[in-house]
Image (cartoon, rainbow over all chains, first blue to last red; front, side, top):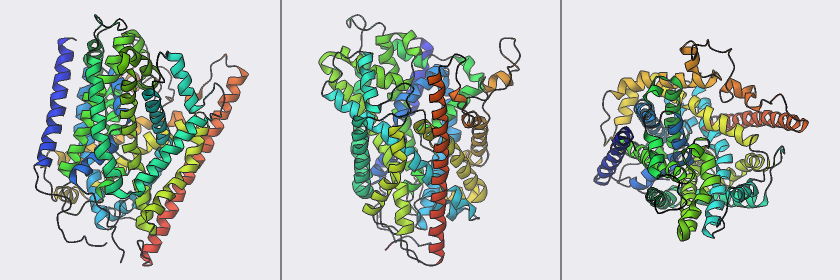
Length: 44
Length: 556
């Protein structure tokens, strides 16, 4: 593989894997759940 | 007053995986690598990421916001969600696109899903052992029953598998959100990623020095995908291709994302959930999808052969023969490849069924089982011609009008609805309610101006598409020659309307001419069917709203 191909591959992979991991870590460390007790939504 | 559906997602992870499963489809593994190769290799990723930022992510947040907002008023489908946000009753009829495209796409997507199931099973029993490309092609033809110059394409194997997939989808949908779609996504998505990772690692381990069948290093294929060709960046067609890829990979404009998001509560986060699902899709597409198909194919076939094949042909017709070079691992490798395609397909097809079911539940008070069966009943008359006729008739037409063109129309509508009708300020406030991920303020003007404009440009370019490519006319010609006389591209809207893709050569045989006429007739009848389906959904929406205004309860 050429150097430029490696640069583009690594840059793209780093960005995508980094963003995906960041989101999942933030999601899993959140205390909020979908089944938290909340008042029922207003009917329209 | 109307009762609100009690269906909810069981967990955030389940919701994110279901949304990611909706987005991750066959295109991630078959279409993306081919698009990258055809549009500048690594340089394609520049317009691709720009499109992700100005088109993909803003539309993900817009669709989630529209869905969650509609859910507050008891709507789980786009007619209701659009009606809640728009100021005119007209909007709910534009929302019909979100039901129409789901049903039409499901009619042919489930058919491809059934091929993946057939291929996975046949691989596992080692059916492709020592198979050459002709044997694989024979297997493919036995599934679809297609013969040259014959409009009928029936196959019992194919029909049985297709029926099995339809029943499986209906059964899963009838189990509801948490016990059906969410459960399948929680199992299917990790398996898909595992299967893809195993194949990618095994593929990159191919060594021409030790593998007598390999003609090149898989890294040569990886280089083919990633080597940047910077001159492609000045080509508007490349930018349109990148925007199109982003658009279709995230499953924007279908009505599924709004439906899934509508089961959230008013203060549930949508920015973090939506962004996580979008990046998961990108991971599956760029990191996994870009590392399997092309590198393995280049290693065994060489660069020149791969350049002449499309992603679909490589994946279904060539790959089973290549796995045979992997000895005892071959049956499992075939199963992993077609298994991951099956999981990618089923998590997407379920997302097409849910809006139809939700509409029948919300507006006509059907329960889960009834609405799942009704979905099957609506699907059947559309799916049968797909399975029984040549793929160039109903299959191709459904794919173009519902699977390509209407998605752009729908996305343009919702970008305008969100930013200009509902108002970008209100839309932004609605989006950020309960947000656990702060969206940078720069996206405010992007959502207001750039995203709708970008979509209108894509829409215009897909309607008025010249056969020679826009760059030839924008640059005033090519290679010192003036631009050719205008001719519509066969894959543009006008070209498609005029059957430009069914052009016959000067030496066409009477048999080819007859077949071509049959195809044109079938395509025209297909368009009448599609218009009929749209009008039928519009009539159902009209009836439902009349019932609402008369105070008839939708949900018992």
